[in-house]
Image (tube, rainbow, N blue to C red; front, side, top):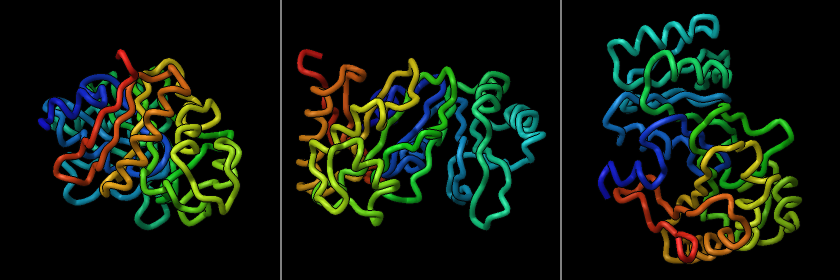
Length: 255
């Protein structure tokens, strides 16, 4: 798959694209950043980890008071930027406010701004609390992620961030094995991965689908999710760390 095709799968050529949920948000956004041929940026509206050394962008960490002006200045000479604010915690960075992200996107003239808009503490699945996620108003696309690896695993804090919320949204019980139906309910629920998406286009992403078993479970979850909601027209099954990151694009029948 070419870089252009990858960007098209995620509707990530232009605008502000936010990632929510769990199971590879940064990996997905970094891959899209590297694939974009124009002026593109990565940032966050939540805590994020320090930018990796091999990130395909100029890294900028600046005070919340100056971050917008600093991004605008850096964008005059850098076509790709990753920016955040410093944190007192080692290995972490503080996100911008959604309003700051929107201002950076407009003033710096980015074609695409990619935003980590949710935290999941490195878990594979999550359902949001009342104050989550933290997307940018006016975002064009929201990528709603969950890891295909959770299918068949018991719902515990080992794989889930806020397992009690996952249980409430999906109709499962803590300790019970997660099924494709449970994952599909999370994707399709206004209290799950559709929380806070506004008018943005939504693209559910079942990531980490690497084994035949994971891919089969992801396909089942994708088909059910398309039956449960008309809020999206495709579900992407992916393995975003693989050389070929898109496993399958599952579209609504007749779409």
